[in-house]
Amino acid sequence: MAYTLPLSFPVFDGNEAHYLKQAIGSGQLATNGEFIDRFEKKLCRKMKSHQAVALNSGTSALHLALILLGVGHGDEVICQSFTFCASANPIVYLGGTPVFVDSEADTWNMSPELLEDAVLSRISLGKKPKAIIVVHLFGMPAKMKEIMEISVKYNIPVLEDAAEAVGSMYRGESCGSFGKIGVFSFNGNKIISTGGGGALISNEVSVIEKAKYLSSQAREDLPYYQHLEIGYNYRMNNMAAAVGLAQLEKLHDCISKRRAVNARYRDLFEDLPGIEFQPELEESTPNYWLSAILINGEKTGFSNDRLRIMLFKAGIESRFLWKPLHLQPVFRGAPFYGGQVAEKLFLKGLCLPSSENLSLEGQKKITDIIERELSKIS
Ligand SMILES: *Cc1c(COP(=O)(O)O)cnc(C)c1O
Image (cartoon, rainbow, N blue to C red):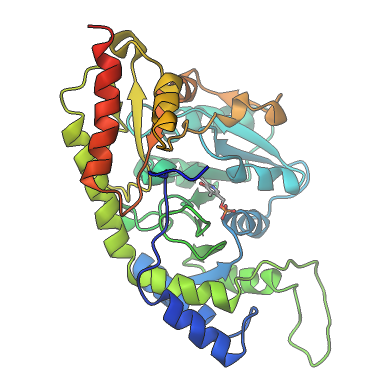
């Protein structure tokens, strides 16, 4: 169904068509061509990172990152439970086991206290985790200061899944730039899109070199095809990079507009009882890829699913928050540290339309629907 107000929609109103035409004109559409290099350089400048590798999805970026961190068969990797399955699936691709950690209420991301509990518990079992995957959910930065302290204390590298947090800032620095490796996604409905795409950033040159090598079939620099390792076909293509370069040029603008959408929701919902927003730390500047709310059914008289259906009937798309991975049938039996924080967020939450071109009128329509539902209990 085509929604009148979709959840999240990229807008291609910059140089996208112009660059795409140039890429086609150059005859270089595949994983060669100038836009890949230009896209990587621009991404580095935006993230103040040393180097970046453009890849064909966020999932392949996470897979490569785990390989680069040395994750292999039988290894354990700690992962935030409250996230999309793509954060943890690559652990399983490598024959590893995910160990899930619950969220905290301040950011909805990984709890540093529970992370330390999990690390100590796994070490005491003789299974020191190989890596820690932290996610910045809906673009909201996790408590990176505390998490990096634990990473340093126990010497376990952090992989930042910043798929949803392109351009989000924490203590003046970009999400994705805190861990040993950071990963982004440019899939269809993310804050900026290359159709499908991802990237990996790191300040370690050796990590970047190896990522470039493995993502292009581990081809040796020889006149014939020689391979010493098993590689992957994970590079971004030149057409996607052409669109991506144009999207990066307007990243700042995309973020301002999504932040304005979030601010307007906060204004419009100010007097509505039983509705809360994803909290924001003072040291954070989220990109607000998605605006997410919690519905306290005792005060509103309706659940998140009831609201989802009411919005749906009006042609408005909304979505549940991620179902925690420790509750997913596919990850049954994986160790989990925590309580019911993520589970309760899942049971109460809803993501609202958040596209950069969402109008005030559209947001008022959503407010009216909520007010109408609220009036039924009073
Ligand atoms: C979108 C997303 C991914 C995967 O990125 P793709 O480009 O779709 O492969 C990974 N993690 C999170 C948290 C995401 O939202």
